Length: 326
Image (cartoon, rainbow, N blue to C red):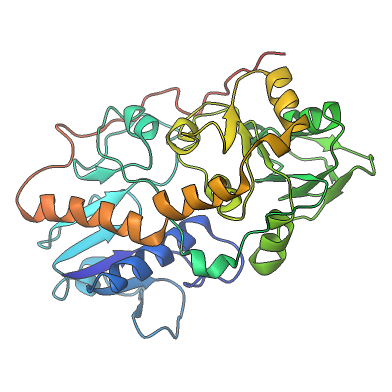
């Protein structure tokens, strides 16, 4: 099968440091190639990769994507008019009520449900980029998200770590923030690393005793969760969004909307199985597992089926902040 991915990003693929959707596309490309398919991707980045195409803003998108592929995979809601069969993946949560193309694919069962849809494929990552896990971690936990986003709940994560008497490394924010979600944490038990990626991030995660992830919204998926699992870290999180699809075993983490329950689990990180965490991510959230899921969707579309029974529509309150209890 000839597959063309469309993601009009200016970031590099393969990603150098940042870029969640870019890392997913890279994993999907690797997985589909490994299964014997011809795969290309088009972006706004002037990429030297042999299968990369450059999007020319002086030409119509349609003129640049028609003619080669058996199927086109948009990584955003595409509403244009092309002859080639296509699917779209919605990678985030909508801020407004709107309809989506009928062949839109979501990232988890709850993500699809929030759009009155049924089709979803779990994200996967290209694990060779992450190295090996560490089964003898150091004495700290970690937070991995944009600290300035209130829905990511840095404040709640700090509360859990401090009550558990556990040092914490914060990946994704600085010690002091005066813009949205203002905070300041002078504690020496908290180490802030700003926005980091690559091997620097992987090293901090693999040496951690666990990920604290008490998000306050319906997380569409959560790459930080599967990255942490792969590197051997149990996950302590709320049960919102995609988290119940990922943390499906008692030995790889705990989901709760209670700060006290999560705190008690963080106090007892050694009761969780780091080998099970690694194996779970490797089995269910690899680039090949994701590639097979999407290939099944492509085959359905090429056979004339639709992926959802009707056009998905975003619910008005998808981005509402959710509540935790003490």
